[in-house]
Length: 124
Length: 324
Image (cartoon, rainbow over all chains, first blue to last red):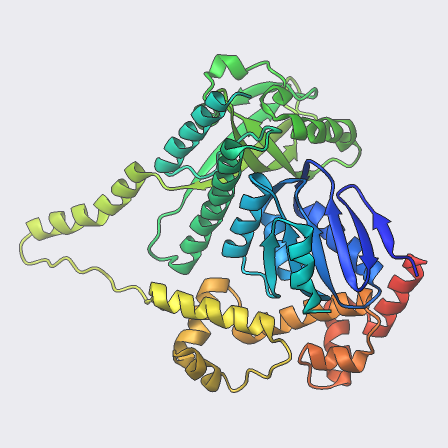
């Protein structure tokens, strides 16, 4: 089974039951981008649900339409999401998203991969 | 861009927001420092407020005064500005003469200039009307992301204008608000002056009045439905009771707030989720039917076909073939 894919925005990998999404450095996500990102993820998942570790340290901007899309459609076939962030920008974007968009599945932000993985193991 | 420069732009943006203009944004730099985080969060806040402003107008359509700020550009074949309305000059902080004769691209940000160039290259082929997303840059360096509507005007002799580009925005303008508020007051005042005649304001049919608490309850209703599509929400009375409101408020309030009835909203969301599961999942339709709260497989298939023009089986097959 193919467990790795990539597009202009991110690389995707499935390992040990966790879906890893790593955004490229400096990406700015608009609605078209958000749709592409979710589509790519869904075709990699082949109908399986996973907890996801979303490394968004490279993200510089997420437009409103994209935030709304992620909150609504972005959670399909995901059990939980751990954001991996760092100060200042990605941290503030994730906090804003969690406060304003209230995603439907358990979602939390972490500063280290270890903490993020620990959070996700309860959803394996 | 230096810290000082970015902070100055932030200050300008906040001043504009104070004046009721929520459609400006601060240009992003590549930095990852505290100032940039502040820029990022204020831009996002402006986006939310801009949307809420239109949304609130929707909630209380009979009360809120909604202003439409418009920029018009008349452009020639090469995309140079032939004429522009004064409002656009004000919003962009340019004087008229600075804009005339300039290519439109001069007042666009770097990212969308590419969009504009591409558009200019290919638009001639199909003619007609177009909508594109462009970001204007004011003289002070603030950004105005805008949905632009372009109409082509062909073959008018002696007229160099080839297209008209229009931008529509919402704003609150206190002066206009006062004017409109003043009008009925003056009428009452005048009619009171005439003895014997009473100023009778025709009572308008009232819409449902929603308090902040009502809105909160309706928003809760929406998110409950969204997160539990499998659940049967009928009868509405019980759902309303659970939320601590009544059927009337839930029914009409929901329609006011989201412009769609509760059941139709539920149906749309169920279909939306089902479509993704059909397209990208491999779970049997039986479980999709359950997961999305449809009554039966037949009901699901019928509703699905009506909405998307394909049955779930056909769509899955099609997606599968496309993927391979």
